Length: 165
Image (cartoon, rainbow, N blue to C red; front, top):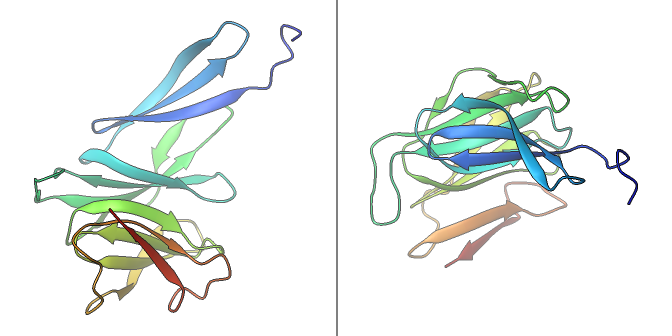
């Protein structure tokens, strides 16, 4: 490997309620902390938009065997060249502890797996989190739904896949 020709690689790391942006230096095998942003509660899961402009983060003060009382979705704008992160729109309160979150293939819907619901929010044209457009009320998700994904072909209302632990 020729020194100085390694492509720049960025990492986002969740540590409690802090999201940290690092640049990796492969030549020196180091990570350089560039910035961080504090979130409402501990980070449980994050999902990047297809264009990389936004990261959608599920936060909670709950955890395994701890229901918690405060749960949110947060959209962040990310500048991958500078490492700058900022809130993008208001945080969205969730009625249950988030386990996982993901976008559909179009990037227009955000699916959040909670215990005991699947919740779908629209993503607005500007990348902010929009209104809740659906829940899984009445669907048996099992004792502990862990990860749900949209089918690659969408449509979101008929092709949800839930993996149970």
